Length: 481
Figure 1 (cartoon, rainbow, N blue to C red):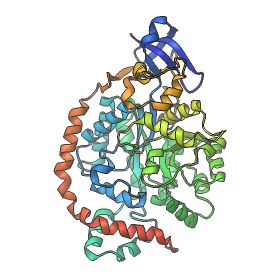
Figure 2 (spheres, rainbow, N blue to C red):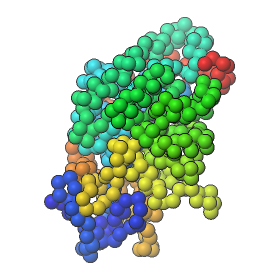
Figure 3 (tube, rainbow, N blue to C red):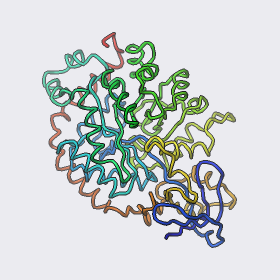
Figure 4 (cartoon, rainbow, N blue to C red):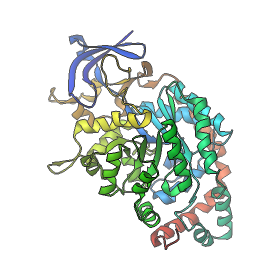
């Protein structure tokens, strides 16, 4: 049995803060939450945040000199990141997530290390999640079209020098697995790794990267086995342009028509949604995951979060592997999202309590299909984190300041002291308990540096490819799709 003292308790996304509460944990459940004057010296306790869109990415943008590159030119830079041991990469990614305040993570696994067969790699990722202690949704990447641009691959390659074109073909134009095999792989992996905090989702990359056949197979599989689906949607204006040309009846209506738009679906970004599309998403109960830092860093734009909420959409929060300071800080991401979208003058869009729901319950639903773990009350899962209230409030003048206000004003990962997920203490004294994260980060960096020379051909090709991609998107689609 464990007791935790809370100077302030934010028990969930509604109900306000409670002072001087003592929380008792027994195994994986909370057994009691009681008033105790002795708890006044404790921390600020609230549910862990949920990172509902990420990629378990092992390198940061600045490490491969790809900071401040628009999305369509930035994506090829991911191929520069060396392949390393999957367990090592995943423990580092998940450990960083915990220390940023996220106890649950959606890993849309778009970058396969490829050093073993995929089921073996998936087992390593699942083992890493369990060792670290995060709740994990492992969304298996599916893709079968448009490897470089949204139509016009041949035109783009024709404009490159022969040397660069040869490198790009070798690196990016390998044949895709048939759609049926990709969908079958999801079920194969799920049978091997699901359970003990890990679930598996279909992870179609996005409509522009998946054929109708592939998406229809995923929709059918999701309906048959109740498996959740996670994908990107309308992240950039170029994707909106492609979608309008390819699906004049509407891309969201297309997803609905093939049976993919359900409450089992979560959609990352959605920056360029139209009002009628928001209405349809809200009606079908799908979740939108907004990624403020990522959208700013890769120059994609700002999602209309206030309008999404006004129209009844369920909105969650994700870091997308691109936290603003490259530090996986979900607490700062929550603050950034709130600051960007909260209001215009005296016209409110995102109430403070709603921001907490976005960062906890809604994201947890996208990851697990349930909000269990997003409240702190007797009988529920023992998921909670402890913020150092004395540090956070060290400069307060008004002792009656609402703790949620203070958290949204200045809370960051440096204030995190302790976290429990499903009753297990996964962060203690600001450190991950399940793995030696410091040593593993050092080993990961050493492996990546050792493998860096293997990307010399692609690094030489990147300036020319980047210029060609910029020119391609500046000119528009030219009817190529």
